[in-house]
Amino acid sequence: MFDDGIDLDAVRTDTPGARERIFLDSAGSSLPPEPVLLETISHLRRESEVGGYRAAAERADDLEKGYAVAANFFGCEPEEIAFTESATRSWLNAFTAVPLAAGDRVLISEAEYGSNAVAIYHRARLVGARVDVVPSDETGALDLDALRELLDERVKLVSLVHAPTNSGLVNPVREAVEAAHDAGALVLLDACQSAGQLRVKVDEIGADLVAVTGRKWLRGPRGTGVLVVRNGVRLCPTQIDQHGATWRLPDGVELRPDARVHELWEFSVADRLGLIAALRYADQVGIDVIERAVRARAEALREGLAGIPRVRVHDIGAVRSGIVSFSIDGIGAGAVKDALRGKRITVSAGGSHGALLDMSKRGLTEFVRASPHYFVSPAQVSAFLEAVADLD
Image (tube, rainbow, N blue to C red):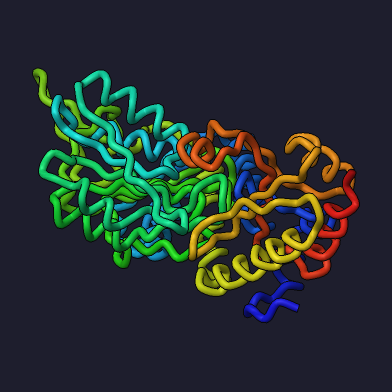
């Protein structure tokens, strides 16, 4: 039994899908709890009754309170919160708003996520900036000494991935942020895989910009995200509409002074209300309790998988997250995923494109990813390990 403070009966009652199958894909798109589902569906039903505008007006106060809910969860001020449609939208809005010109430098790690890397290299090529990769240390984490050596006055941005998509690594974010700030660089943190399973408090880690998704460990609806923009960070937003700015005649534009300059006017009200409910739910369970519970389940998976013949666990880092990556000799990742699905077990399979630098360095082309959330029971962990051992 996991001794982690989780009321397993209660959270599994709120998660019917966790009783019907062994769900190990919270790093992909997790199972929303019943309060999130109810909030989202009830608003869609209300829209069908009175129309979207009136339904939104009826929930205006709740939508506004959502900024304080998110700020409390992420350790910042309500004016530092913007709601978006995904972590990708959050990250791109932040990245494209960072001033970048010819001769400037951007630092990334070997754990950089594929979509981020594509945007960074593309924009650097357009403006004549340079991208440098910070190597990893012997554990696989960002090498802090190498980071300090690469930092100089030309570095405008350090892009960090808190928890990579393809391994159990957790990067030393706070120390990296301190080093970047000492050199005058901004830090954009991809917290897509950490928010909701790890403690992500911006006032503790100090990152200037933080991109978050709702659908993964936060257990919110798809099509939701959060962007945290610290007060005082100087940016030049490039994607704005009349929600984020005011048109002043004859040709003036006055930008909002808060993070909501990065929002767009149109969004799914039902999904945003669902995300706010998910944040409240996670806060009620307690992020420190969640972190302990997820780590306990992930370590149980790693230990069990390591004892199965032909199975190779690919996780790196001295501090590890709830993402467990592995492969089975002689069976492709997609085939493993499909075989487990036939046993009512949900995992995901990934290729090198999501973390090309790290995967190429380690000679990996694909992996199976199991990501257990706190609603996974000890019996389900054991059943999963038995199912993997039976694959041929």
